[in-house]
Length: 255
Image (cartoon, rainbow, N blue to C red; front, side, top):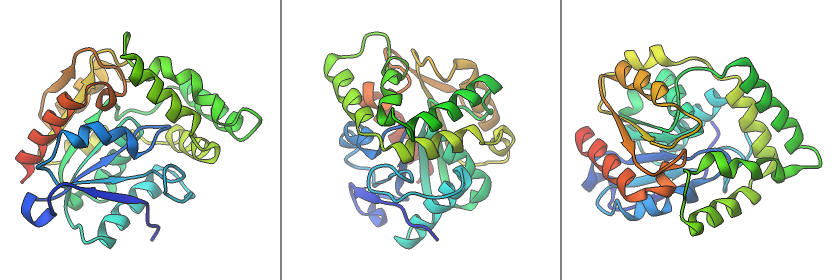
């Protein structure tokens, strides 16, 4: 079983209930959760870097193998049940985990993501980016994403930080992730079978995952959509305090 890079924050899991596991967006790594975690001092948090990102090794296969590696990593550190929340690609992986390892979930958080597959044009664009990342463009292929990742008027320091992260995206990780996301399955039906506390959250200015996408998931989970004003696709980076409040509520409901 593949093991991914992980980090633990906050109180020990024995004193704070099941850990809150955070899965990051493409093409970033777990650093994107830093400010959100700082606003969750009473919640045991565990972050995991996606295959090929941060300190995690590359991994073959797709999101299913990533989900299995998450489960294997948690098992290796003694976690049998967790509240798992993912943003964007992290959300796709959380959905795969819900399908493959539903007993692991004490709660689920889906942030700025969707359960449906990409339309053909978007899938083709992902595959094109994967090829370009492995060619001469390298990490530069994701630089234009800055305008779709953030809201309409992000603070300049946030834009600068995210731009820096994009320049550090590993080309092999970019290619693997885009191919994995292009091949992902529709998992809306998986959500209808879950019976755990749930959070569906969206930056109100998210240009990638629509309100309708989130309402569909929320309806399947029997909950409502939480919208964060002023934030785009990277809600946890742009509005960490509001996202932390929603995650803390999810964790409290799952304890």
